[in-house]
Every structure is written in C-alpha cells, then in structure tokens.
Amino acid sequence: MIRRAKATALWVLMALLLNGCWDSKTIQDVNYLTAIGFDLIDGQYAVYVQMLDFSSVAKTEQGKAAQEVPTWVGNSTGETLGVALNKLYRTSQMRIFYGHVNVVVLGKGIIEKNAAKDPRELLARYYEMRYTPWLFGTKGDIKELFTAGSFFNYPPLISLLHQPNETYLQESLIPPMKLVKFAAEFREPSNSVLVPSVVLSKASWQSGGTPKPMFLEDGCFVFQNKVYQGWFRMEELYGLRWFNPETKRSPLIIRSHNGKPMVVLSLESPKVTIQPLINKDKVAFSLNVTLTGIVSEALLPLSEPDLQRKAEEQVQAEIRQTYEKGLKRDTDLLRLEHELYRKNNQVWKRLRSREDFHLTSESLQIHVHVNMKHAQKLKY
Image (cartoon, rainbow, N blue to C red):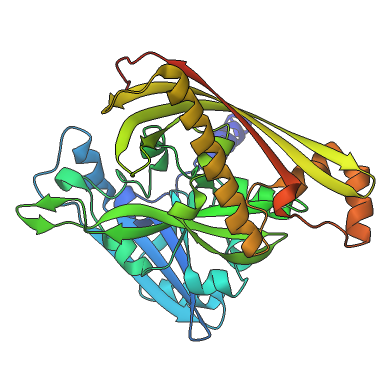
C-alpha cells in the first residue's frame, strides 16, 4: 500500500514538472514589433518602433480589409540606444517582442556620425532579434515612414519597406540589403557596402483625388572600410545595375543625337567577370559584362547592329559614370580593391602596407557585350 502511494505521488510530481505552459501568454498580451529604427538627433539617440494588430493583419489574408489596418508607432530618446529602449518599455503597457521585426531603418544622423555599428551591436545582444530583417537608411523622418500605409487598406507589411524583393524583380536598381549581409560585408577588408535609402513620395499615387505617400528608393548610403563615405543619388548609381549579377532586369532607353527616345530595351541577367591586371606595383582592372537585351518599345527605326552597338556604348558609359562619381568622393563603388583582396591577396597586402593603392580613371577597362533577342512578350 505504501509503495503504491509513493508511486502515485511520484507520477503526480512528474506531471506537474512536465507542465511547461505556466508562463505562456496569449497573442493579445504581447506587443509584436514589425519594424525598428534608430537615429541620432541633437546628441541624443532616438529609437522608433512599429507595431501592428496581428488580428487585423490575419483578416486581410482572406481579402482586403474594410478599414485601414491601424499602425502604432512608438519613439523615445536617451543617451544610449539601450537607455532609449528602456524608456520605451515604461509606456509599452505590455511586454515587447522582437522576434517579428522585419525591417531595421537607420536615420541620417546615426549614419553620418559613423555610429551605424551601435544598432547592430545592440540588436546582436537581444536573443529574440534575428539577422534576417531588411536594412534601409533614410534622410527623412523615421516616424513618418512607420506610419505610412499601403494600397487597398492592406497593412504596411505589404509594401516596399517590408517586401523590397517584389519591386526589385521588375526593375533592378539597388539590390535589397539584409541585416545579416550588412554585418558580413561591413567587416570585409577594402569592401564597399551600399545600404538602400528610402523616402516617402507623393508624386505618383492618389486615392479619391488625394495624393498618397508611397515608399521610394532614392539612393544609397555607402560605407567603405567601416567608414561612412556619403550618400549617392539613384541617378549616380545607374551603372551598378549592369555590374551586379543579382540584377533581374532593368530598362535602358536608347536615344537619338537630339535626345529623343528611339528604342527601349529590357536588359537582363548580367554575367560579370573582374580581372586584376598587375604590372609591378601598379594595378588595373578589366571588367567584362555580358547582358541579354529584349526590345520592349521600338519608337524609331534602328537596325539590330546599330541597336546592339548603342546599347553596349550606353551601358559602358553608365558604368564609367558611376565609377567616376565614386572616385570624386574617394569611394570604390565597384568594389575593385576588394576583388584584388580576394584574387591576389599578397599583392593587396603589399600595396596596403605601403599605402600605395590608388584608383584612377585609367585603372578600369570596361568591355560590354549585349546579346540581342527579337521583340517578344515581356514577363511582368
């Protein structure tokens, strides 16, 4: 009898120990962040967070919502980022959860002070935070970015800020940047890292006659050797799309001598090779780019050989222009020095030790070949 009582007590105790749901919380008892932003304003660190009501978001999966999905934005300031975040906790009412953060936005102030590493190091200490969020910079107000909506009362999760790959597939300009990619490339010697810059634009879309702000990538914040080099307009970076193997497709307008559009091409899938050319203590680079071209609009007659030649000349000119824009600010936008570091490390070390690595206009040879296809239906 005593043995049976002991066995029963043991089983009851084991059952109690196996119960692991005592501290579980229901979904409505937690604040789930979807985006977080950092800035440096008047010597104070500023933190911005975006929260959504996930019950409303779930309803939109069955169709568009009858009303706009509410977005909550919080912000606080402090002497450090950690202090600013802890101030935010005081008014959050419920526990904040970082596991659903999909976007990290860096403000102009924190970027220009070369403090971009501070948010990265802070987030790395939060076990809930992953390295998978998208990373953007902005010259605008982060609070306005986080309050912007989307089409048809959809939540902000369905936007360029949270899903940048969708627009990149249709027009490839600057490749989207993940936080994990930034962390890896930021540490690479002699590497240049381009963080896409995003703003709100009211120029294109209206609803009921009222302009609606939508996200727009307007350029890039560039870091080189862990140092901020400056912000570049999108028009200054057009050459990068032909240089990047990640490019899906991008338009190229062929113009006549008086500037009128003649043909619009869709150039796709660049194949790029970079070969360092070493002559004693001088280094140059041979860049070879091969693209596939499809005619999407033919406005004026142009023979295929002439079209191919003009396309190759224009692609070469755009790459050259982007390269020269970088040189004016002592920035290697094409990451040529990093190619030398990877392909001929001994030469790179020797030149670096003597501080004798300098890029000039003559340091780059560009060769472009465009394989033309006949006009056909484009896949949009």
